[in-house]
Length: 275
Ligand code: HEC
Ligand code: HEC
Picture 1 (cartoon, rainbow, N blue to C red):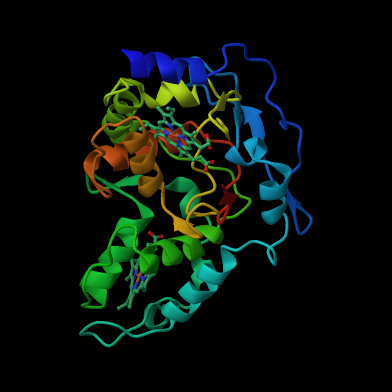
Picture 2: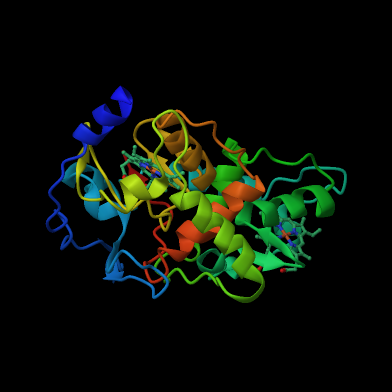
């Protein structure tokens, strides 16, 4: 109980306007949607914000210019990987896919259901790696996969997130929603307690955002590498002393769909920069 009280006092109670909500994310002449009306399915929030608006001026600035954005080192490495043959078929991505730009728009619609299964971008890449290249599966949040998914998601930068939540996606979405609102861990907190009830407030030295994933995979200053959505979910679950689900698990994929749907309407920012 004392730990719960401690966390609660870390969160300021008053919530006014979100500081920085009028900052403009403009990259090479393109203006991104970082603030917009919440999608109809969100019951408790009127306006959705990209995590970018909650960051300090210094961190925000790193995303304003691709030359300053440290993520591009990893995106460039993925471009080399794109041309690298691997596996028993002796093929590279570029042996079959003409150009990575053919994946424009893909990220904005993921995760999606295929043959009854919820698939993420990571799953799609691994299908090619294992079944079409005859190589060992790439680890879910390893450097090869995080770089490649950042490169592919980058092709959709500037497009609005638009994941499907009805039809065959509905049961996965419902599961993700349930996880989002369920209190877990020693601190007995749900994602919603921080990212819905307290965005805009400070928790320790950190300015709480809505926990959106439109910028993922993204570069974090904290660990100087590309971080994946599931890696971030895991970190937040550890912070509330809960046992995290596994990266790539049905639970995290459902949570990814649900959280992505809370950002429907925000621009894809990949690769974003956060602290
Ligand atoms: C032997 C040929 C082959 C190789 C090599 C290959 N792919 Fe594919 N890939 C395909 C085919 C065929 C599809 C399914 C048809 C489609 O959607 O284009 C596909 C689908 C995809 C998709 C999903 C596209 C969509 O719109 O649903 C992604 C992403 C992808 N590949 C990425 C990669 C990456 C990254 C690599 C290298 C690590 C790679 N592929 C290597 C043949 C290949
Ligand atoms: C105790 C409060 C707390 C809880 C509970 C919590 N988070 Fe977070 N989360 C944070 C903090 C602090 C950050 C870093 C600042 C920020 O972006 O909000 C963060 C960041 C994130 C980000 C990165 C956002 C961005 O723009 O880079 C995502 C995504 C996220 N959380 C998702 C989740 C999910 C999903 C859950 C539930 C499994 C969860 N969080 C639970 C505190 C929390």
